[in-house]
Length: 285
Image (cartoon, rainbow, N blue to C red; front, side, top):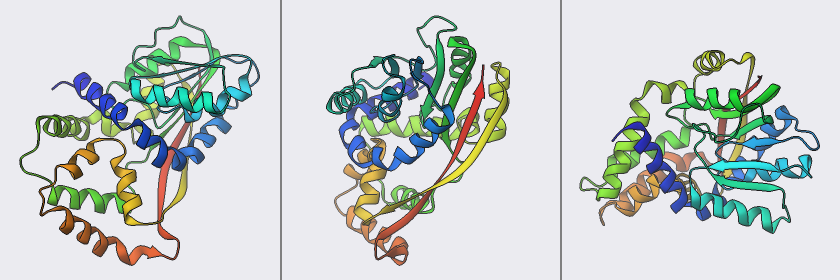
């Protein structure tokens, strides 16, 4: 499997889980999207491109501000775009054009957009091409603002993945075996690791022609009312959902028990408190 195949496989999983993702993940990411929006500061009638829009959260925040101009929102996951279209329609938003498109190959002419934004959507593999494409399609002085995860996983997530590896099936289906290979590529690829490092990202942006990059590192608290909510959240991207569904019959209960033993002491009256550490990048063409 090559990096491009791994990326497409991830997109297929996002498509498969799009409705679940929109229900259990998107609300927790709204504060991050609003931080991107604040830094990008779009104005009326500005043309904005939302990269890897997913289920349309950020695009739907931008659209009322730039109206009557259209927001262009792209993603590789067609299932996510379907959910995004429903989200926009349900909110009465008519000025978003959702398109299935690779952020590494933006099929628009150069110097078109006033701003490009993305909320946790920069592709792990090949983001040098994304940065170059963004630089190409931005107007002179146009803004590029995006958010990305810090290198250190949230504490509960680390526990979850350690236990998942311990209890996972040793005889995966073809689909799960392929997903494991895609994840291995993402874990071992130096570019993918570099996307979580501000120094690396800033250097790659400079190579693409961006200068004076601002990096804002912020924490966003969230609460999981139960460990089942945490499991649903982490399963909503697809690959963990497949791991859980293919656990041997006798493994799921021990997994749940071990998760409860590890994280139960952290459960307070409102649930499990967790913190997302996010790097926010802002620069201009």
